Image 1 (cartoon, one colour):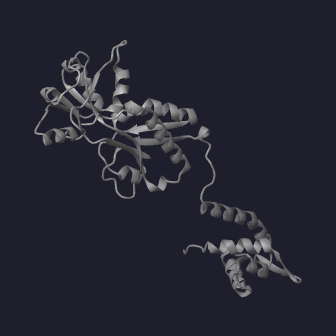
Image 2 (tube, helix red, strand yellow):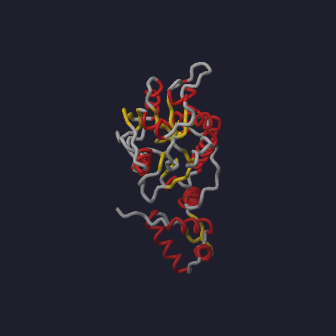
Image 3 (cartoon, helix red, strand yellow):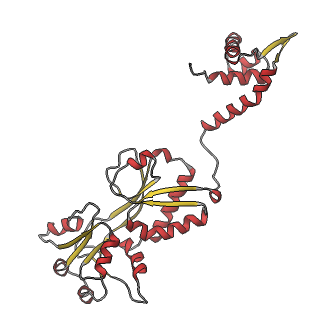
Length: 315
């Protein structure tokens, strides 16, 4: 069975509205003969005469009258689909779950504030933070994730992105660690310590190791764990030095604080590394979705309010 010609709906609407072949033709910029042929096609596909002669004029059949409202509504809906949406959604009544792929460090540093900001505007919205086992645009393409947050990798040219903030690595040790008592941590102090690093893939080398290698130095990596929270948990109860993003440490301090004492001693690295750019990424099909745009704007506001303003010292 062949698909119907949807262009006939426009002609049907004109014929029903005008109740005249000539007037409908003028309305659509067609000749009277072309509109007459179209009426013949409409009679065939609907099984109804639609317009019949009554003296010197044409009148609608009961079948055409019955189609008037349905045809008008369909045309109106089709036109609204093909025009840019100008409506603003009512966020306060929105019921939707957004899936955001982000690592544990981001969730611990920004999750609570973000949930609070979203809940204030949209109390029925749910955020589902999904782990990032790998860096891939597949979840965005398939629609199983609404956003991905992290360092940009090879996500594909079609993926849209927006910088949220720029971060940098810092060192963190337990209170009373020997590094806390020496003031400025030098390269010699740093490489003399044992280190715990975070890597989802178990890699034992990163930007800090590359920077150290460039000046002929190497640190002693004692342990590799899958996340920054795990690295800090080990550093807090050992003499190992953890390497974490500066944005993550304030939340970790609050979560692990006992009384008024700080849970960790933070220090700037004695070696220069490139800043870390954290972005949010999404599929282009959601680019103009007003609800998704609202979500991106809230995330941007929260990240720029929470992320530290300080930058690593110059070398």
